[in-house]
Image (cartoon, rainbow, N blue to C red; front, side, top):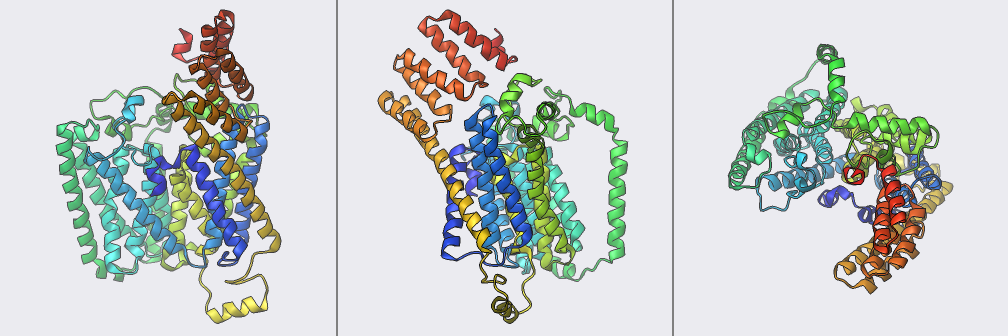
Length: 624
């Protein structure tokens, strides 16, 4: 919830602060002996080692990255996810995954409620400013995470957890409440017009229902909630002013209507699930029928793909441009087969990988590479795929490490027997994990901790002790502890592993602290400059430079402050230092052209503008 309402945790300062906080928790708990709560399995050690190696390789790539400060941000991000993974692995006793999943479900339902209220009630703080800089997406719901596909990815996980709870919660009223809440995230995905969210949800449901157990109960609850969600989406589709987020009196009236209808549908679905609870508890589906349905579903999917004319669908996926339709953008986009530029984003990233297959172009370098080699007239920061962007920026080495991290968790979860898991807990974790991986494969959820954090938590549960079955008896556990040192509930991790974790933790705290303090000083400098306190603004910028001397951002900020103060020579000097640290950043060269014009250096301005055009040849304002 906290990450969601903070724009998904996207900001650099929040990422750095969260990294420091998580690792301080881990380091203190290890130092005082409070954790680990259970012996850390080998799969968790392997997954953590891959993620730690990814952070190290990202740090090494600073040596050839186009912007050292951008690469350093990615180092801190990877260390932050590693901290969450380690935290889940050492803080979870055996068979504790149900508590984690219950907490995630509760938080995600609250996020769904906040998202819907922001659309139904215009006075609620929402994302009304989204359309100011991205008009085509003005109608797509993105609050509170700040990105519609990121919000939908989180809602896909919410649906999976609610379907699971609807079949396996320990009380009838809890099962009914879980099913009653399913229409909320479905309606959010519709209002976000996210095909990626739909794909993630479908993939997760296939895993959840495929591994079971008690598929009939989960399917029945999911069907009830799904019908309710589809009904709400159908009703909302007729309220065009509300869907397009126009913010006028008609939209406000339609929002009130949809709020009342949503409450009515939720209550009705919950009552229905409660009334049929006893009957559903007695339903037993023969395994032969289950296998038959699974085979028929797979065949139906294959036939549907073949009948859809794949070549035509692929050609449509590669198309870009405005949708020509009379319906609302939300509905038209949801039914469209276009890739919204993903084919172009991925192609450019693969070109970068082809040019640097082993080491990549350096962490955080895709944006600069796109500016030079991209094929669309639009700014793009991410390649919209964790795996393809990793190939571009970190080469095959980075891709292997990402796949290793995810692979250890996936294999560990499958080997633990999800079909035999008590309460289908293991299947639910696998479903959330699968949905998150699908989202990361087709979007930039890696940069949104509120979204990819779900993958990391589920990975920690799959590889750690949280999804292991409880010991048969506490006496047997105690005997194992006393008889074999280093094993059992109160055992300490191997000494070398503990020391390595502490060392990584201290490194992560240092890196996160450096980044956090830099962002704080830069924020203070911008505020002081806005208040025309140029002395304080310059000092804050110099403090940021001392904290992170390899970064271009603090020196650019100092150059802008010096420009405001009229000291063009000092501004040019600091800007030159910034350009040395990020030579492929066209914006720095554009600022250099402006400073040269003010200084009367017309030749220098022309050379700087020419370089800016070389680094961003499709920018309309640079070509004029």
